[in-house]
Length: 260
Image (cartoon, rainbow, N blue to C red; front, side):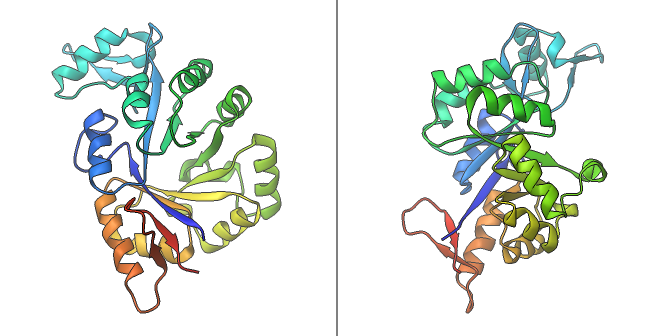
């Protein structure tokens, strides 16, 4: 039976500051089956969990993450009441406990990502994802981990993923095993074509329970959400209905599989 993954977006960012150790812990506490987070690299080579390109200083100026040291980034974050997490620390603390879905925001430090993954190998095979096809290709060649291409509304015109032939060629060329598709461009036709091309499909970012139900009925492989506890409740509801879509796996993991 096909597994369904409840994926905490940047941890559980509805309840804690995104991309922090606190947020990742919160996701686990709220029944996430997998955690997603973003990676960037500082000027002194430290890989950190961070989404935006830059961070504001006490002088009001915004500096690129890639142009400041880890200590400077850490201090700026502290002044904004959150703590920067190192990728290395996440691998040590969370790699043994939960599957990791790792989004690489820009290229240039793929080798260091793979080195750290080999130094601190996670208990579950991670997924490495990016909006950037060349980053996905490089990650696959360097590490041969599972990879995914992220596609959002702003990029859909560049790639007609509704065409099964294109999806199959894309999977072969990039070496990807899954697509992370923005909720607003997801349709049953797109899902069917991607699945028939041999790809798993994860939808982002879904916080509305009705939308969660809609995508579960479509049979997506995972939903990325800021509210993994809400998605868990929706999954329980759909597993307990007269015509259940899901079945709860009896292993205390909180994971669900599709009933059919």
